[in-house]
Length: 458
Image (cartoon, rainbow, N blue to C red; front, side, top):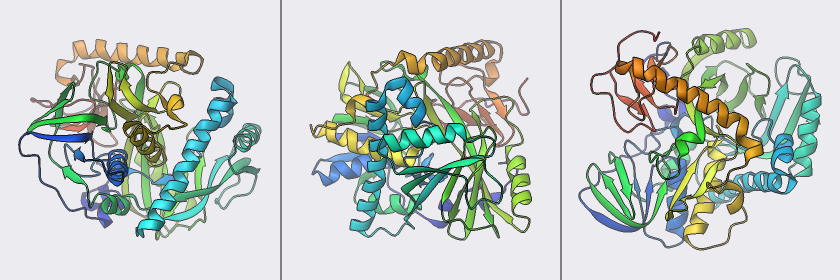
C-alpha cells in the first residue's frame, strides 16, 4: 500500500490478534460437510454444524480470516444503507420484511453466542445511524419503511457528528465487535486445513493442491464463487472496494454512522481509535486514485489533532437486486451451497448465511430460504444493474484481448492499475493481483506467471 508502510498497512484487528496457524491437508480424506473458505461466513457455518453434531472440515487457501474478514469495519447491523424503502417498492412488503428480520435476528444471534460462550471480543450494543448532509425527505421515507417492517428505527436531525446533518435514521439494537477475537474463539475446536487451495469441484469431490476431499455436502464460502458453471455467478454480481483509516486523538462516538450521500463517510469507534471510512468504488475503476489522500484530508479537517495509525481496504460482492445469494449453489447440485453477494455488510449477513445453510444441511425449515435463494431472478429489481454489468464486462474482455500482459487469469479481462494499493484490479469480476502477478483476491485462482508491467494502465 503506497501511503502506509509495514504494520500501518494492516487492519487494527490484524495488528492486535494472532490466530494460531493450522497444518495443510495431507492426502485424501472424507467428511460429511466440507466448507471451502475460512472467513467468518465459512467458520460460522462450520461452527453451527459442529454444534449440531455434524462432522465438518474447513479448507482455506491461505490463513484463517486472511481475506475480507480481517479488513472489515465489523458492524453487526440490519441498517444496510438506503435499502428498505427501495426493497418495499421492488419486491414487496412481505419479502422486504423477511430481509429486515433475517438481519436483525443475526444481531441477536451474535449477542446470544458471544454471551453464552463468554467470548471477549469487545462486543458493544449501540445504534447505527444513517445520515445525510443534503436532504431529509428520503431519510424520512426510509425511517417509515424500516419501522413498518418491524425494525426499531426513527428519524432525527440531531447526531454526535462534528457537522450539521439535514436528517438521519437511527436504528436501535445494533452492535459492533472485534472480528478476529471472535473468529479466534469459534475456530478453536474446528478441523481446519490452511494453505490448502480448492482447485475444482466435481460432484462430491473437491480437488485441492494437496489431495481430494469427498463430502456429502459442500459449502462455497470463498467470498466470490470460483466455479463459473453452473451458477453463473460471474454474470450476476460485481465487486466494490471501500477504504478506512484508524485515527488516534479523534472524537469518541456512542453510535455508528453511515453516510448516504455520494462521497460521504462512515464512523465507528474501535477501542481508543476512530475508524473513518469512505471512498468506495467498483473494483477495477480506472478513476479510483487518491482515496487515502481524500480520507486523510477529511480526518485533518474534522479532527485537527488526530494521527493516522493505520489504513486498509476491503471489497465485497454486490448482486443485481442487492439481496445476497445464500443457499443451494445450483439446481443441478443440491448438495452444494453458496454464500456470496453481501454488499459490504458481511458480518451480519455471514450469520444469516451460516444459520440458513446449516438448517438446509440439517433439513430444518428456515423462513428466509426463498428470499435468499440463489436460483431466483427478480427482473424488476435487477434488470438495470444486469445490463450495466454486462456492458462493463464486455468492455473488459475487449481490453483484455489487446492487453495480454494485463489479463486477469479468471476469464481474460483487462486489468486496471489501482494507485491506492499498487495493485492490478479486474473491472469484470473483481480479481486483484500484485504488480509481480501474485494473486490477491478471487474469483481468479491462479497468479500471473509473468507478472504485470509496472506503472499505470492506459
